[in-house]
Length: 290
Image 1 (cartoon, rainbow, N blue to C red):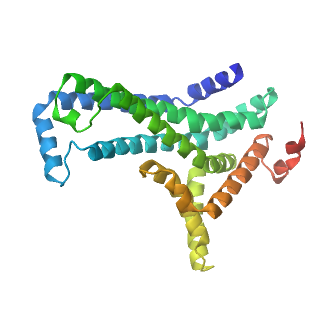
Image 2 (image 1 turned 90 degrees about the horizontal axis):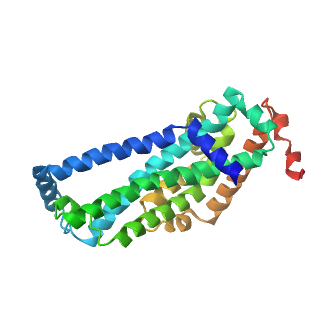
Image 3 (image 1 turned 90 degrees about the vertical axis):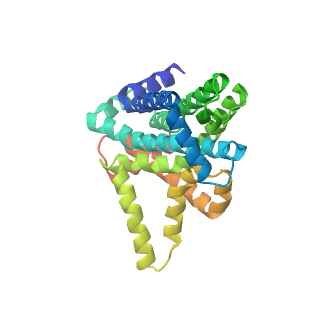
């Protein structure tokens, strides 16, 4: 446990953007929130604009749920962006600095190192960003107790329990996103060890495969697969019923997607075990070593 905590702390120290970005967003949000609360004329203008552009009541539970979903989607997208950036840099940074050789000399397996980095990217980073959702909901709830301002009425909270419930719902949604992101995370880690720009390689490579399969092979199977692969995390964030994304994707996609993740993790772990990148690095004998 102490080893895991130390490694998590090391990731936080080496990747300061992970904490600085949420703090910056929190600061900007606090300034904006305070300015809106102090500007009564702006509050009335916002209220009138919302009221006249739709047929629904701005105080309905449906509108409140839409705002909650929008907040979760924005924070979730920011979390996904930072997670993807972290995964694309963490192993590449160690290899470029030469620290990967040091960590291989320690009594820590490559599998354990990958598990820590995946847990940090897919669990710790979303947990840090979930604090933004919790704080935002707490702001609205506290203000609603002492003010009848129109902006607070647009984001209805009836109790402290509802604040915690919304936060737990966001965490559940992000946990589901982390599960479906695991194969993509393995793929990013693998590509990052052979390229300084893994995200560009994956983006351009994906579009190239889609075009070639459609134009040359006259088969859209690869295009459909890549479309599902890139869209399923954001679909879960935006959908009011996240589990519907799995049924829409289909068992065939999920099986192939999981296989891609397993192969990617095997390649990444194999490459991480060696200093020089070569085909010999992919020797699977380490799988059978005790």
